[in-house]
Length: 304
Image (cartoon, rainbow, N blue to C red):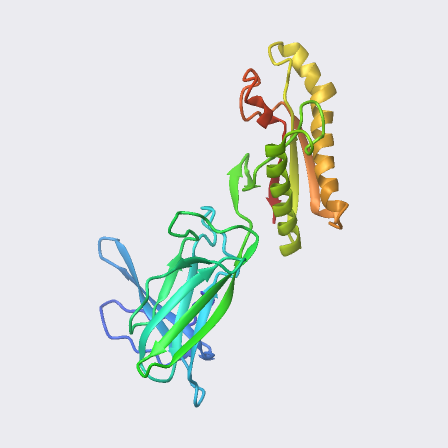
């Protein structure tokens, strides 16, 4: 089940619909299917409904449980693309189903989420990527969807399928910023390690996750944005001179430093582009002397 439409039936009034297992272009392969109903009323209102799973098995002696996981890459970041995962479980042949269960396990093999145990009607379930505590799946990671089906005779069948979590992003400046902590720097330098223990820990975690993205999705490219703090913010003319002579070169050096972290470990430099913004995109006002350290940063943007 990959979401493609294989057959359509239309009418102007309600009538029973019978499907013979064929498509507009002939017989379809054994698989799991879902029927979707769309009704347009005379006032223009459109309503939709969806059937349970339809297991099509024409091969003799077929008797097995099958789980289909879609999409190929799950990205629950609210951008409207692959924000939900669908797990479609069906039993092809055999005795009637008594119960079924679907659970999601994290990359370390720990239970992350379980759907309520189902009864005799096997269903397709949709998931938003959060567990009961509201925690979201980790990006650039492989989860595992496990299922268990018990039939009326007490026979149990289990199986598992991978769930690939894509890079999660948010819209910023017309691009897709990767949802990791920004790498922060010591003032006036390109030093991101060995200057603040807490920040260093977060910086390392961010770089490790970016490394995961580069390894898991070799076709993706990244754009690295460098930023800096204006210490002459109170003097417009001096601040502009500082921008040209100090902050842009410093921002550029910060992006190059971070890019080198990855290229020194084998990443192709062609997968990166860098941009230096200096003081032009602060997160907090430069007058906030205690908080402006977050402006000394690089950000990561996804280029598909």
